[in-house]
Length: 399
Image (cartoon, rainbow, N blue to C red; front, side, top):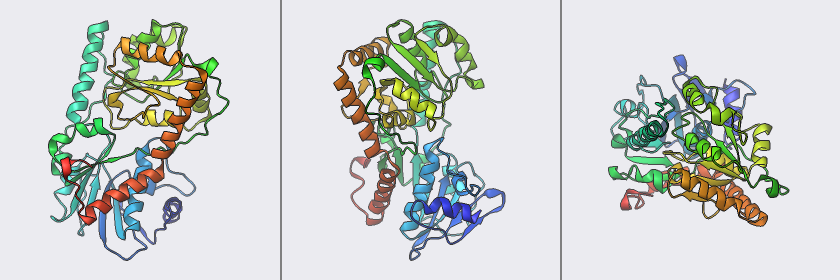
């Protein structure tokens, strides 16, 4: 176990002297190589620190990488780091901690058991649960009114009060995501979602062939992420083609799949692939066959599907609530309506090959520059530096 964790952490530039795993895998303890300054408790993803020898960290979700990077920052700053799973609500402290960094789940329960002078940082990967849930149910209600369907394809976030009990907030997202937390008046630090999956941009991409081909890529909560809207638009736009990559096989999505069977499997210009590993050659082939991503989600922190597609050079046509800035190389939908989705598609189709190639390159370079593991590490390190140096981080409650 020790050798496996050492090997994984070593790739980020440091090595662990000792790893101790509590009974039931409740805690992994990492020792800093620097002069000891204190202790940090990280309640996030434990799995990357428990891998078998030769097993690489999972690339299925960015939070595996985030956990490693957060630990790295504190170890390099001279802190010993204890890691527990974010679902561990039974943890009881046996030492004083300088910092507590945690996802929203069990934040309050664990933080109340820590020393009073511990600095508490809530690490947020979604919009606020009230906003998210309100928009999620709104999408379901709109679908019900359009098609007489009561769908269960929803992403609901549990009620929690991590924000109210935290001293600082770190957040995956942009100004949209931040706006859902501004009510609390807490310092909010925006972090760029890091993508462990990177792609070489194909300079020979044939935009004559793919200009009318679009991709929808997403995880669970198909209505939440706007697949119903996209399918309806393409059913009425036969001159354009859509590829759908998502968990169509999941039990929770079978009601959706049944309701949209015609669009998914009986509409000539729509190809339903199902779940695709974004680290696979299959995904690269799909991305190279399409010009753009369509992603009209109703609420995100910062959509990993969008960042992955930017890395692959897809031009984004996305909702404001996706939490991703397009910086002139894509389109933010004015609203997630059939009219606006189709308008964004047609505007893209009418561009020249050179314009499409330029947008694709800019999307790729933006993601490579702003959403790497190193950009995340630097951003989180800057957060801790600002906190430690007492800089003016309270202005407008936002950083």
